[in-house]
Length: 74
Image (cartoon, rainbow, N blue to C red; front, side, top):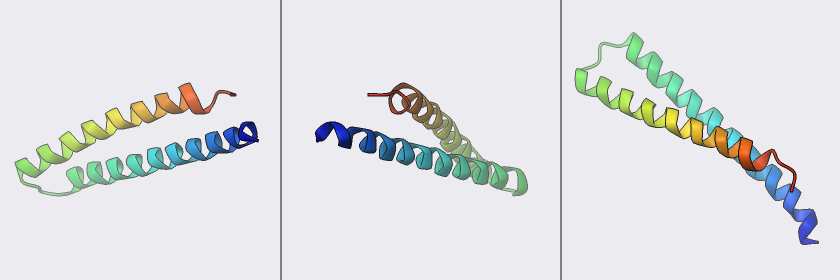
């Protein structure tokens, strides 16, 4: 019985990671648009760039996790 639940857990886990990826990409795009369309103080620009760098790292990690774990058969 536990074996039948594993594929469902794997599927839900992959869906969750995919949603996190989508949300993170959206926030990153919105921040980049804000940088390009606004006359922000330099400190705010640095803060946004730092957050986007962190988001890039997070995206790479989530993509790797999806490729390594959730797309493989048990």
